[in-house]
Image 1 (tube, rainbow, N blue to C red):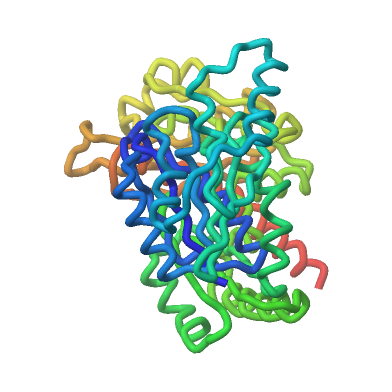
Image 2 (cartoon, rainbow, N blue to C red):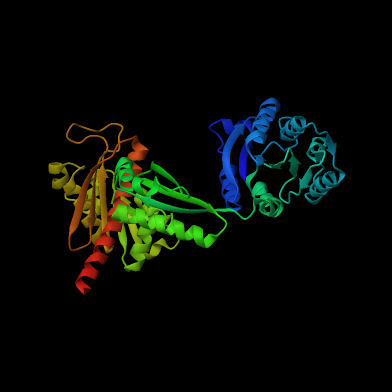
Length: 421
């Protein structure tokens, strides 16, 4: 079955609001074996909505809209679809009574305008809204199903779970979507594709999507099947081949972000980490502490932006900064070693760079970042040049720093295995 989602609301066509309902609906429809083939955002215009529904009826089996079911004059989703289908809107006494009772429970007088929400197209099934006043609608027409849901996410999600999912499951025929997500970092998209295209291009039963951004590349594998065992077996085989082709560049084969992978490694090895950050402004620490239980592996960090605080907080010698410059391999190493000593952590990260957009020189251009990792025995340092705006450079630098920690444990585990063999 093919589905189209229509997000209704003029506010969604501005930078002030994001359409998150479509993401939820796509996920839930895919679980039911329904493929989303189109998404449309339409303002609060009855002619535009009528046209959007008309196009959706031409190309989808299931049409799901969100929004435009409120009591005000700009809520015209009901009217647009009713007009398109040639069905009269009639006041539904049961729906009206439910709305009145909800207002009574809240101790409020229902406004006359709320009666619009009890208007139901001929032949439509009202969908109860336990979290708001706007009922949803289930309409079957032209061998299609149109489902009208309210816009507030908590109302939409509850209504879909209680009123819609089971009805759709009975129509989907048991077909479901299964997926895998591999995440990589440290290589260019073109290089990655060169390594794996011979694996995914011949596949007819698996759709492969490659997405680059945020200092990583994601590989999404999807297949449709009625049999979960067959689907998972196929995805495991394809993911395994891609893993082999990309090697250590794959940091996650279950969709987890890099900070969670690093957290797992730190906990597994009973290790702790501290950070001394300059250009990233505490972003590494923020990512690590966003995970519940982070106190077991993250001892703390400093944002030593000024040269004075590099010395005061991470014990970087003043003469080193003066001779080598704040953005240098030597200062990154001193930051890593200094913060590790002062906190007593197993590992220390030091990072310094030029995030831009100004401050660069021919010798030290914008985007140059020095990252160091100290473990008490040795300190590794890596210079990297990132492209993009300030936010992208900062995020990519935090990604590279976390990847250094991941590879530290990866290399350690390998050395331990070799020693045992």
